[in-house]
Image (tube, rainbow, N blue to C red; front, side):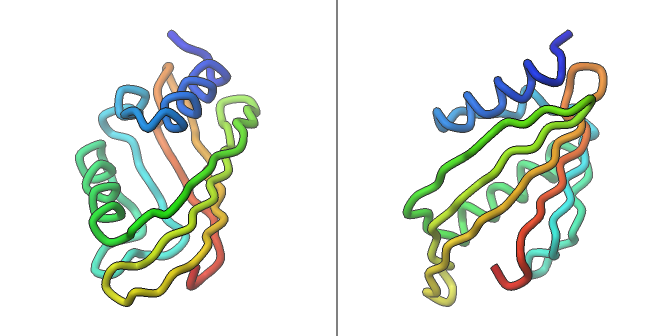
Length: 121
């Protein structure tokens, strides 16, 4: 079973390579956004719902660039920073986003992710 630090390092490595991180998640993981995406809930419960939320993001945003900082592990959790330059496809509004993700690990899997960013970002 991987430690929190090992999962954090693997998550950031896979993410930076544009590879799938789903294998690091528990099937019943929960994802919590700071604000509910349009027509969606703040919480996505279960891996299929988390995957669907990610697909929604890709379908609704043109990503011009992205970067990641971290990870910073602490006990059973770790934080990573995300920076995005995106255009919302529906409105054409381009924006820069600075977001933090807090991930909780249990039994060698990510069981919860929480995202922090400014309202309207």
